[in-house]
Image 1 (cartoon, one colour):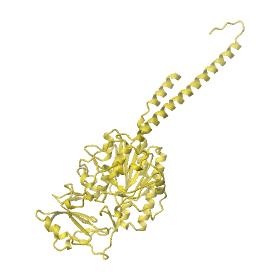
Image 2 (cartoon, one colour; image 1 turned 90 degrees about the vertical axis):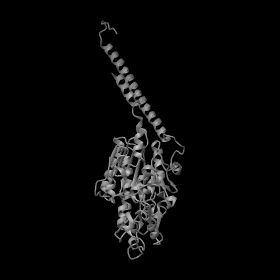
Image 3 (cartoon, one colour; image 1 turned 30 degrees about the vertical axis):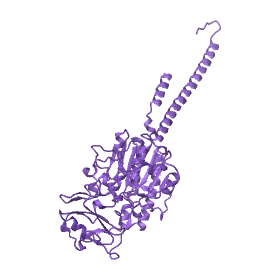
Image 4 (spheres, helix red, strand yellow; image 1 turned 135 degrees about the vertical axis):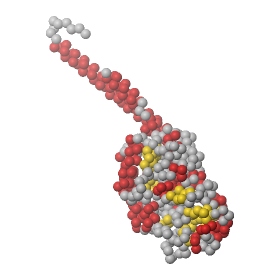
Length: 471
């Protein structure tokens, strides 16, 4: 009976799933966290994360520097003109219909453009993925969704710190109890506060302090869930934030007041949405509209979409309208009259420093106490695929841009070297456990045999001398 139990436990130990040793990855976005937000706020947890891992000077988002396009670049490694999520708002130029940000999050055809996010790629290669509130989570891609998905509810309170902790613990539970390999997690701050009060406000600084507390809680929760040795964490953002010049202090950009321009020459427009806009002129009116707007305001940039600077990578998609507008930092593009009240905005040229987000990474895959130079966020996707040991989809990023931050700098074709080391370690631990158990069983059997012999000797001494005993 004892030997049967021994063999059963040994088989169980040897048959334990090696997948438990795979590296895990958590991608976190703190929306609108500008690269320098930690300079005027005490951020002990972000500072500790930098000492324990990697910090980038800053990262450059894609143009257009707004939430949904920039987040889909993180998930796909593609520039906006290639992944097709060109705006926060779904629109139909034929009907003139537009849908606001939250409704657009649930419009499958807006997101499912043929470019696969990393959740689906990972699952097609045998991993398990999840997403909590990350833009793009609410829809399916070629009929597939993340193993675990949760979209933010309507009128979600982005500032509630208790909800942040609940979200964190939920994600750690997914890793621990559902054995997920990759999860994306989204927080809507400090973007909302930056919009409302401006990036230089005390309210923004208070929110950055809350973000720092959240980073400490995230790492603490990972430890509580026993994930420290496996979980890699990347924290970044979609864009930065710039102060808006208030009315009366500058000459505002109001398209309807520009001589020679008329909205009657335009069949569809996306303006009154920060510093970026697009226009669809009526047939035969493109040159009229272009000529009226070009050079009409010193802080307004007007392009036929095919003439946009190539570095913006915002020309080659049918959803991008024929005329593209963007303003200099501090200025907004208004249609008929000013209606925008935000004190902070994004959507500006991605070369502007105010548009640059931050980047931190920590975990077994990353080197420690390393600061690296700036790189584009399009390169985060191949980095994540590399850590997870999956073959990436076609993308616009390059692993070489981030390779120096990794513990192992050697190229890996499909499986990460970290994964190989973990498999070997797991096998060693399993065999050690079996050997230890067998040793215990051996000791128990030896002691049992000794005790049995002792008992027999004592019994023999108690038998009368004239009685024969047989064995």
